[in-house]
Length: 352
Image 1 (cartoon, rainbow, N blue to C red):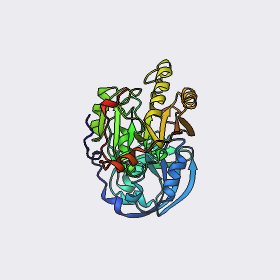
Image 2 (cartoon, rainbow, N blue to C red):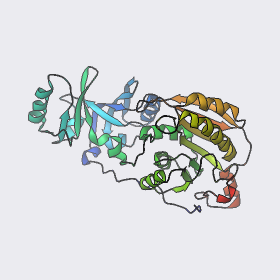
Image 3 (spheres, rainbow, N blue to C red):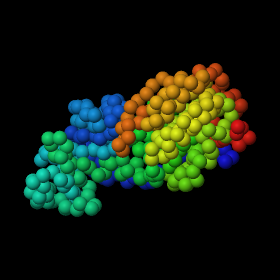
Image 4 (cartoon, helix red, strand yellow):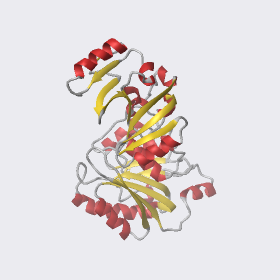
């Protein structure tokens, strides 16, 4: 790859329904991941019209006042539901729509008839806009248009791909500053790249992977500087990368613990080499003991935070690492040299 400037990510079009622009006052339950509730709550607290009612292990209940288009911009929740009440303003603005009712018990068929006759909705379990289910002691109506894929577009995925909410949390932990170079050396289908580009003002956003199929999927999700390389032998100069984000092989669905025993120390030494001063890396893994051990053994790296998450039956941690070096940052070098900070690109000549 030659370091040419590439356009920003091109995500699939996500058309908002017209009723997103109608002001409503209602309660919603926003689903997220265990471990991500605090990030969702903090994001919501910065929005007008939000009052946080209650935090759950994997959700935040809010009181909302305003157009749903503003709430739909938040990337820290995956789905949203409203309590199934006669006075729900959100359900009222939906008008005639399609719905399904989950396995809520013996009252299921009675509720289907009530929604058909009372609200004029059409029962269509295969193509629904409203999904009624029981959560705890109440019935809620999940709104299809507020699902992540409906708001931001559907992404290509691979086995063990980062989920959108996970990518949002990793991006937040990364603390990208304007113009900085961000690298994902295990980019897979590129979900982290999509979210870094969408949520930050990064300069160059670079993705590498050993698997050509993964890079093909990443190209479908967005147009970035992508390259094929071993994460233990990266084609970058010493001290040239400001931020690194990665979903490492957990050693289960992808790779093995025995393989990780070779990969993790080799990658962490390479990470130490390429990081600029005051750089930051956020690494997601479920092979936690191994990562902790080697993060402390590599002299130039300093672990500063661990965030425990849960996704798809796994319980990975996001490890935040900084470095102890004192080299000029890549952003400073590019500014001094007068180069285009949005397109440094890897230099094959620096491969070790």
